[in-house]
Image 1: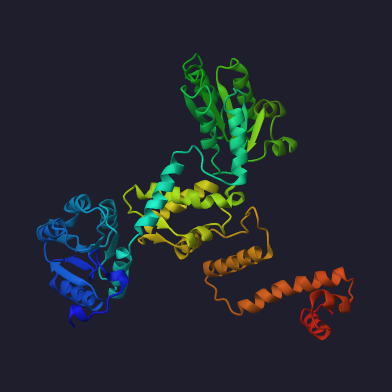
Image 2 (image 1 turned 90 degrees about the vertical axis):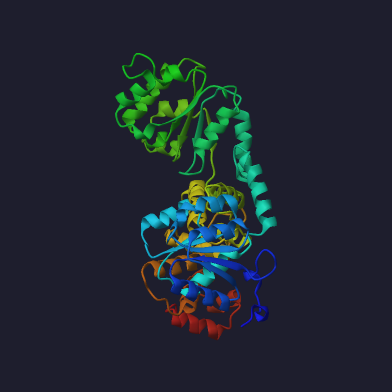
Length: 476
């Protein structure tokens, strides 16, 4: 078939508007032949060579829209050429294939900036699908807009435009200029350390040092003394080093009674104004105080000003900005420029994020590194969250709590549990309807004190229909 007669799709056109050209480099003639024929049938133009030097010449001459190459060739390893290719044409997708399908090869391919690594033998259809994905344009305008927005956000000390974060900002603006002790309370991963650092950076102490001490990591009070008073308890510790600065006592809620006593003693030894103390707690210290799990005297010393940091599920409107920022940062690691679309942001907003901002950041880095697609969509996000066995729970949007959201998350949980347990689901529709109908009828009958006529009117059902449904549920 002549190339002029091929009906090209948009996703296989090259940068010049013609069919995309695939550069194949493999010393195995049979593989070159099979790939060339398959790609030609798929509508691509193909050039093939048995050596790396010819491949490098083509790349340098600005030929080809994608490289498909073996690792070992007669004139050397392609890994010797990849750095030059990346420098010469940083946006050229490179797919590495190798019969030496081991971890070292895969890691080397990723380190050298390959778009994807495929072990031999491979499925031709999957190979063609991968090539098409690699050639998909990222969307220059969308990528530029996302990068520009992320750069603006990166210049800010904290990210978030939600009402709950605005309240945090107002509190920070009031407490930062003072030397008062601050207690930051919030779940793991909400960003308490970052907020503590921001308080320091916007205070009169910003030129002095800032240190974080995880006090929950100490079980022996003497070890904590050595940190603050020096190895021989005669100076040279944090009390001397941090004069004029700020110390964050991290995770005070997780300390033992013995350690709480020692922390109290250390704070009492500080001269007024010498060192500013900020403390963080993963739990409510007031609740721990009421339960007898936290010293009252230490609580009152730390709780001069308290700031509650909201969990991510209570600031859902911030998820998009955070995801774009983390994805931009991850792309700088050499994993290719990727963007996240609206559907993916909407999917992210459906999850409860028990690990909060830290968990979202880890997910975006994982998606950038492990996902070969240029555009991250809802399906990609959903699959990643399922693989991580994170169960969606009703996300606390500022405006939600509606029945539809709860039902949606319940169905997601059912599907996820079935997948994890390897079960096949049958009659999902009937089961969900029954699960909703039975409590609906029970509560309606309770409201009408068992009067079925009133219950039928309240439900908007025919009385005979209601009686049959009640009989089915054994509620007669």
